[in-house]
Length: 579
Image (cartoon, rainbow, N blue to C red):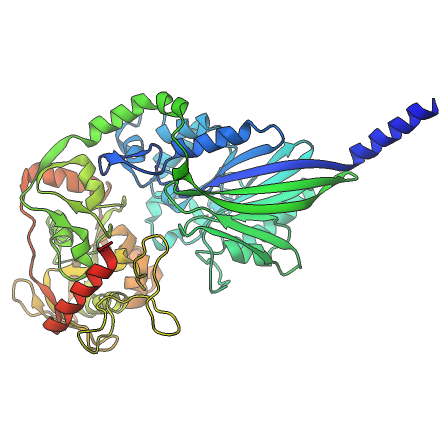
């Protein structure tokens, strides 16, 4: 009897102390529609896809010594023909991405800004079709003042209680028109996290607290209200998190910080388009009625090392065929090839085609546009629906706005400062590259090309006016507007009708707010009209109507001094693209 009692005590002790539990977290982020190992845009195989990620997930789930949670961190509904087709063309069938995520058995997801960009009809429909919680604690319903999406969710694995709090970058109003996020506003991430961690702690008392934030890492450590990239700031300033998953910036992060309360927090997130995904292995030990972390390690995994799962590919083969048939429809003809590389170094047929379409659609006096792809080309000959995803990457609307002559000039000055280096001689770089403390170019690990200081999709040029940019002149003195394109006098005090995309018209890139110094709250008052369909759709119909399109240069702007620019552009183009 005594020996049986001792055995009972030992078993009881093991149950209270020393019980280890392994948790495996797998996070994909910013997939942007990368479902298949095939690019419908380029009509060729690709190296990365969720089909490959699923091969890894399946193998990890077969390891019964661990508990796997599969998480997604937003920006899933925009970026490829795959999702565009099910967002806006085939709207009666179940959404392909919802079916894919249900098939992969995602446990939880967060909402991304590009998901909101698709509009209520798309993301509300998508939310109703998925089998997991879709989180965004700081996206607030204006009517109820409660989160529009679920704020957090709870999992229990071998008695380990895991809380996942989701948030979205609050900077959405800086980029997207209100109609896309109607009846919502977006709260600051730090204050939202402070509120909900207290609720979670009091109500749930979890063993692990995970942040799933569609927001990047702020390397400057800014904590201004409404900060776009604040994932690491939340990890630093809000007590309780063990792991903070990041997204949005496509960077790929994996580091630990000691927060303001002396606790270690892992900040981690993959890149984009299913290229790399994040994994976190957590070993917990039971102490009495709770668990403590014995070991926690993060890793970034390259999806290209896995073969696409056969079951996945067979399951979604009918949708693959449907999308391929749609994107391969011819819509017109181009008389010459256009290349977005040219748009980095001055006037180009690539951007001028966008300008021409915008001017035709709006009957505006002036148009602003930038290259939305940095390294793509569209061949001469037949043009297919898939080519439009090269020409125009995002689902922006088209605005017609009222801007003064001075504001137009200031927008160009702002763009030129972000775009071009201050040149002293022909041996200088034309493009404004990032440099280290010794003045040497910083190269990207991903592309082995020098990093641009500005974002190429903010390299704004204009049509409808004639102007010169002198790259030897200082900031705010580079641009000289000589006339309107028809030869009439350009008047700094006159109000002009200007075509811009909705990203720019809502303040994206800062051209209107920091360049033209228009208060953010005034931008909506400047909008004369907006399309109710995205620019890519409008471009498709424009090309169908024209049948044959001859891409040409307007010849309305140039860079000087000419010889400096020519030689520097040649050198910079080799640095950027001759690999």
